[in-house]
Length: 413
Image (cartoon, rainbow, N blue to C red):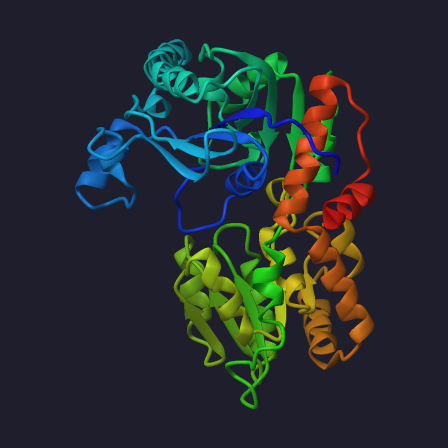
């Protein structure tokens, strides 16, 4: 990719900087900070979050909200390029408000207070001609007044109308913010289709993977070698899981171990599956420990229900499985872009079982290389380069380089 003069990017993030799961926003900003100056405005924790943090009911660095620890800190790089994180003071919990008028008033108050700290950080970093990258945070985004903002990007990685914990005013606020944005970036083809009616440019940047972290484990001795074949799922277990299908599959494959690694949000999943002797649950691990855990897996699965919510998802775990060369069995819940060509797709329990059985005996190095090639192109650095090229194109009207050439150029540099 042609060398660009470092850009100044402020990321207004709904995803928290620190969490027990990987966030696409965080990974994209880390990648951009290798060559550009990035200010990551952290999740706006509420007063109620603060109280829970002090009482130990919610794990995050609540001391930063009160200024007992530095709100503003450098994570990587130097004054010219790199990544800085800004923790905001606690805000009013606007989503408990039922009146839209009062909801807007609360957000205006929150934006006035937090905006002061954002502009202070911008001034300290001497940021000019800023690209504002708003990641799913229209609530405050509609009311912030940000200095030196030149171009606004709205990043959508989910559909507010189908996310159960966002109700009421979320879609209204998103529509208002989109009308002000210069560019929309989405994480899946389905999200692009849903937003196509918007009279704004829309581009897709799929989720990625830390390819080398997984690939380096590909030839490691399996932790369960010579024991029994293992089908694995890594990630949160919630209402996206097709529990009826999964239970049927587990019941009819008693000689195969099913390993689930991650947080169980829906207790019914644990309660219904733990009774089977071939099922094992492991607690969530840090993102950098996932490759080691996946050494136990012979086949990766994504057994999601097919509905409006899951149709817009591009799961991180698919690229993680592929980066270790693992065969992957999925339900047809969404388009997985290039990965559609290398996964086993099953639309019911019977075909899911057949796909698992075929995947377990598969021994085709050509197919394995196809998986690795797709995962390699999905590396987070490649995704960050793609995002930067898109933002540069629309903010300066430079030619947009096709993804294939972008990948080749970044490898050559």
